[in-house]
Image (cartoon, rainbow, N blue to C red; front, side, top):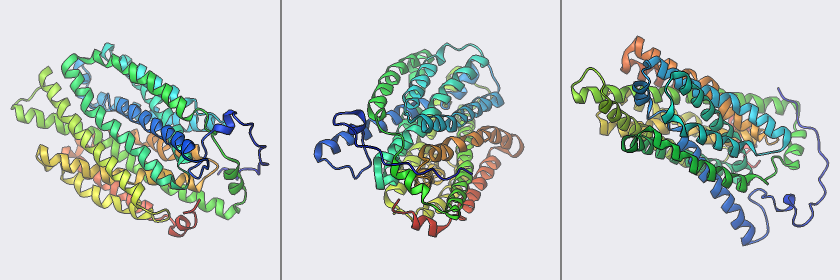
Length: 439
């Protein structure tokens, strides 16, 4: 357990025109239309950067069947590839959060975006599984490095409308995931894997725009340290216990997310082979499966975005438990029924599944930041990267469930995990959420 922050004396006023004086403050910032417009433009650039990052994150997933055929690897090796991505993305986030908090910098967000774009642009040039693993590790580490920095900046810029701001940030990511799921298979079908080299362009410009948007924003505020120092030991323990509950809930939800990614890939493969009346894949069938898979992954991302946006904008601060617990009720039946559905009905069920396991994510981030106001990057990294580390088991669990239970049984097992996540989150203190609603 981390100790409360020490009391920090008030900082002297910054000289006019200095970087500190012009840094964007939370949403209550005075100064008329010009500062508000400036803050809005920064928020916009931050959301656009998140769209680019999560578009890149959906490069390997829709191409998994194509990559397995291109370098001749097995389905368990394909699942391991996705697991390595989740692990690298998750492991780096607490490290980046700690360094960012320690040195008061947001530099690692733009650097992560750039690293991801450069690594994924080389995907069409790999010839071996080891090369593929290296590029996946670099790309997902870069994607992971962006997220705690971006989420913390968005929460800080949003002030007391933190839940709304984080929901918009989250929805931007889902827009990017949807775009990547549809665009990447289409690029491969039209121009081949080497066309991904064009990812360098949005990567460079996105990194520059992100640095312009958040580079001068202070990473922490004296007022947050003061509030933290004033908390009793009992209150500190109470808050950390609640963050722990949110953390376990996110571990389960993110594991469901990653497992469903693989289950949808295998469902698309089975549907493609059945429609073609074939028992084996050709190159053309792999591309067809990739297109179908991409559509379903995009549908899940749309559901994630809609659920996250509605949860963040419609739920009042202090009432988040309703969504944190109740969203599983939507997702569980959708996941169970998915393998029984026709392709068109599967689109709707994929969207509902996305709502079920993702509606709680932006709220969990916003609540954790609120409970730990002096450790917003750490709070963000726990809710995202810290959970993604354990979610790396999702692809391997999915592949194992398929081997032991069949495809339909695997969907049921994953739906059960989502139900457990709702039950865990029920342990949250409603009174604590109400008590901290104005922080």
